[in-house]
Length: 392
Image (cartoon, rainbow, N blue to C red):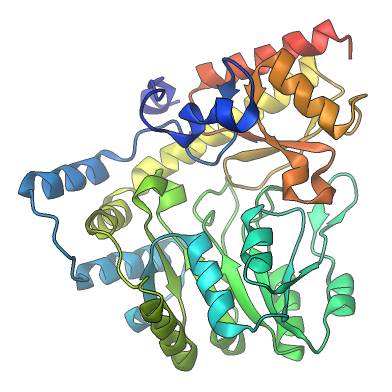
């Protein structure tokens, strides 16, 4: 395991949401934060060097887009996903959730139906509801061991008023990396019902060994023409605070319409550091990423073994990617509310509470694995002590 990722870095007092807002969000004292999806690891040195050079220059006027960023993004998509994309398809934005919101605004009307596949990343609910669109749930099928798309149910809930599906790919929080046959079946349904697809692929780089990410838009030409592919180096390289992202829109009319909507919303300019960080990360961050995912996967295996040995009432769900672990608490003799209170007040840990991802998450908790092993072990030990105390 790389010493880079074993290093414990003090984040309290650095205006970190994860570390400095835990008390405000969870209400407990001295909680160990293992919730929001950012890492407790420093970004790749090449990114830090590029940002330092930008700071040393000392002038932060309005930025102009650099074509070298396009080249870096194109190279990344080709190397990592075997996907060749014309640079004219890129639109650079300041975050994937805002981008999804802008897409919903530009391509649907109030009252139109937008489908999400639950349990799912909780902002998906808000970007639909707060834009006055009708939220339609297509819950994933779960047999107790594995999650799959319920495509029969999907066809049942589509109506003449359904205009869009928001896909989480890879899926947060359940850790599925969707396979080609699953995506092709979904694409066929979207074509049949003429649905636009917003594919949130922010976790695309965070895969376990043997997994391969397949961009939804890369399946075929029809799918490419109806899909908005939302990507970012932010989750991959721990750059969320820089707010850098981009969307691939290969349909020229949709591309123009979205760019115009962003311009009309005065949301068509990224910050000076976003492009610098993106270019450096994609050109020089690959080795760092490979070491990161080895470390994250070893953390995943560590938690799985620890839970099986010390807290067998709990169960770690199988995962194919992301640095987020989905913990099955269904056999714990507590309600969801009681479990949340127990974790905060007795275990002194802050986890993402399953119900925020939808009612299908009622029996689950989400744990962030992107931290040094020392931190992760401390959190598990605190949960185990509370577990033993209650004789579960």
